[in-house]
Amino acid sequence: MLTVLLTSRRVAPGLLTWQAWSALRAARRVLAGSASHPQIPALTAAGVSPEVVQAPAGVGSLAELLSAAAAGPDNPVVWLAPPGEDEDAALLAAISPAAGPAQVLHGSHDLPGSHLLDVVAIMDTLRVSCPWDARQTHSSLAPYLLEEAYELLEEIEEGDLAALREELGDVLLQVLFHARIAAERPGGYTIDDVADTLAAKLIRRHPHVFGSVSVSSAEDVSRNWEEIKKAERAERAVASQAGAPSVLDGVAFGQPALSLAAQLQRRAERTGVPVEGAEPPSSLAAGGGAELGAEPSSLTAEELGAELMRVVGRARAAGLDPELELRAAARRFAERVREWERSDR
Image (cartoon, rainbow, N blue to C red):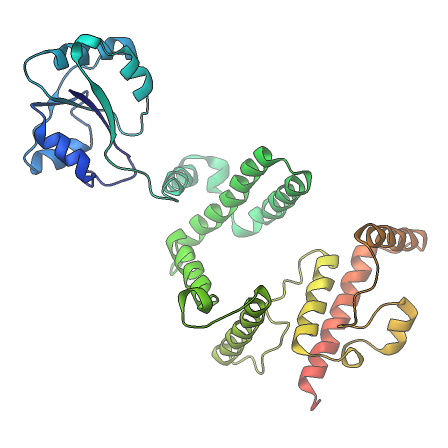
């Protein structure tokens, strides 16, 4: 019996399945193609002594070597495949029938997310060895973060799943890059700290999954989420001595004006800000807008897009920049919301 043992280079040596250890202990010969195979020290410490053989190049030549070993008197034989290599199908097909039965055994498997270790290591190398990567800062990378996010959004809209996979990787690179830069600062943080912060936040904001809170719908989840975020904002305000928290705390005012306006309105609506406290009725009438919290109109997505395009056209005809003007209006809206929050209501 010949067993081709596959192991992951991302799993610590010696952390093998029960089936793998059983095959190793039952083998008369355990062969490895290099003395640097990472499993050798762990196996040796456990009483299994691998034999290093000169592994020839090519699947065919290797199959001949293993066929001869398996056909000999010292059976069964285990071949320690180089970590990460998965040529088992081609190798088994080339094994001589005279060698007897052969099998592939996965001694260890990559855990979900373990491939992220590869890109963390690559990022560390690039930061040290690449002149361009070495001189980047949080500020210099900011345009790339926006660019990659927009490219990802475009692929989502296009429905190109293959391209989406690549763009997700480009966005992930930005996260890894910023975390690597942060790790270099005195008192900075690493990508593991970023992951720990995210994990803690996800658990904290999902008490219906990780705690004892009961929910009956996605709407319940959204309401709980908002209450939790409200409490978090209050805690941050106390810690920073910044005064009373606002429902608008945490809103990114650097985002595009249209998404900024939408987020501000959502925040205001959820906190119960009356429309007269956030936007003067006269401006609503002049703009023909609907009140926050009003019943949805029959406006379709296509009609909305056309209406927004017409507004942009009107702005251009008047010599105005629609992005800048909407951003200014959004800031005025935000200030009226904060004034309402500071009032006695």
